[in-house]
Amino acid sequence: MGVGLYDFQLEAVSKMHNGCILCGGVGTGKSRTALGYYYKENGGDLTSDTYIPMNDPPQDLYIITTARKRDTHEWLGDMTPYLLSTDEKVNLYSNKVIVDSWNNIEKYKDIAKSFFIFDEQRVVGYGKWSKTFIHIAKHNNWILLSATPGDQWSDYIPVFIANGFYRNKSEFINEHVIYSRFTKYPKIDKYMGIYKLNKLRNQLLVDISVKRHTEPHHIYVRHSYDIKQYRNALKNRWDPYKSEPVSNPSSMCYILRKIVNSDESKQVALLEIMEKTPRAIIFYNFNYELEILKNLDYGEDYVIAEWNGRVHQEIPDGDRWVYLVQYTAGCEGWNCIKTNTIIFFSPNYSYKVMTQASGRIDRLNTLYHDLFYYHLQSSSSIDLAIRRALDTKKEFNKRKFTNW
Image (cartoon, rainbow, N blue to C red; front, side, top):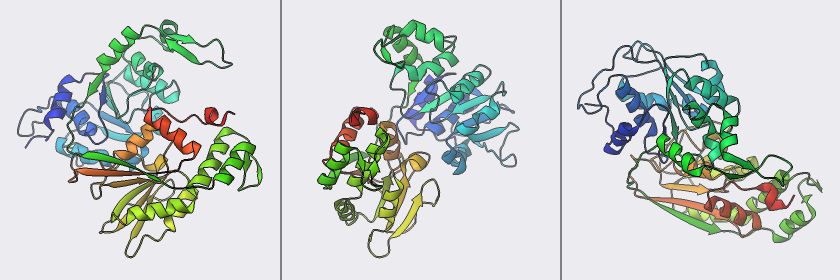
């Protein structure tokens, strides 16, 4: 038996090359496909019905991923068909295989002549991670994996430099960027040379094209909120929970969202959804939401489990459960085929985060055809503004919303 890639994954491998960005929606098997490319590049045969060993030793393999994927050993399962392992006793080959998080990328800046898989793209901007990534790329073979490629050209600067298209950030800016003359801080007004930028990007992007057997259904469930308290807080920039003025736009948005999210009608709407489904994943943003969700009466025999910055419980077994997941801690790096329902108790500000969260149940191996995504939403101005931002694949701008 071979390594078991699908035809669409094999097609993607045939298009991949050093320095490319493998793009695929959540659940398309980017990890298995990336390992397939590594396997092929080191002497393996993806077309064979039996496993053909790589040249021994193949290149040392370094996988830089999220802390959660490292801690849950998700990559180890994807390595199994290739007979690779981070455990020297299990690994078929005499090469080194390491899986670590982006937080530790600097530990590997002096590695050379190896193969790097950079998972869940974190090299936007031009900070410490990006500079270390560029240094590593100069001395190793590498590929990037991304479910949501860059939204603007500046997101591609590190990857363009790593591929040798530009010497440094300054060269890119001098050739392509025009800054606004009417802002106190550097703000990009427009880009020049778009034809060249599109050509360079198209050289790097390799899509995993898959026709999914699942059908998503996004259902928006309205609930009410305390309009008087909301308007008073927004108009007077006043915190009703601390009885003091609000000092910044982030705090203002937090307070407005707390007024909306704490309303009892939202809890009633959630419980009505739970009457229709025995198992559901519930995503939330804030700690006060977690306390609300933990204290709801879901009914008899319901098991409640959590994944957040403090508690790391696994998805429950059984027929009736709720899995409470905080976006920042758990929007990526795991999957679930035990349910077809996700409830967004409140939306995240980021389109990318919402996309990652939605993908937890949209997997190639799920037995469900219909997937249900419930969005609890009020008619408040902040809820509507967040939804508009997400619908246009942008992040919500707190300062603009509050006119701060």
